[in-house]
Length: 252
Image (cartoon, rainbow, N blue to C red; front, side, top):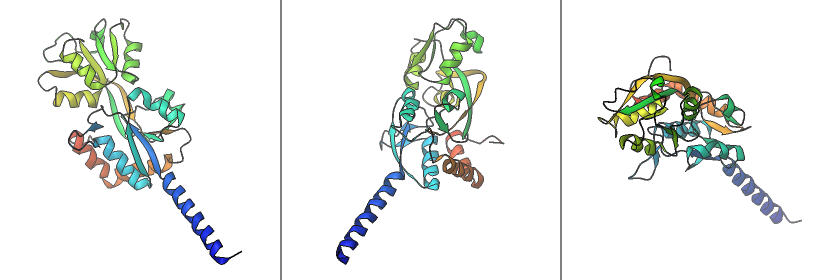
């Protein structure tokens, strides 16, 4: 057996191991492109931007993996994790007991809740009870849809939409009476494209926490949690938060 042959085998094995390592460190990440300001497409660059996008890129850098980022409708995200078609998802995903049975979650990285959005000048809707019997838009697969169905007796008018832009357009075109959805998203729309046309009303309902979702049994949960903790400790999280939402409340 020649020395040259052994060297060639060793080199081949080294390349195989190296390639396997690179492959293992590139994780398939998915998001929903319509949940502003958490994730949205920059029309000029074609790049996904937003609060979640900055969070996951910073987490990946600190945890030691690269990301292969793709988008899909929100209602397909949890099933994609279940089947193992993706490794990680970040899309303003509320941590729930039902979801925790089928996927792993990081520690919470954002405190949220649900809010009502109506057309400017609508004095008929000021709280949840006023939505009884009304036409209400929400998002397919969201906790806001579940909340409405569970808490309204007359819920026949609850309409789930595939994307947040669809339900906002329906509200402004008077196809529905109100939108009920995640507070930061409706608040952002009211301050930007909907300014002067729509407004948020009522309190914050069902306090929620968002988490980064990983496929069940993922080896990356601890690394992701360590990265999030370090970001909060050194002020990086606060910098990203205030870029997208303004001054960060105390205690976050």
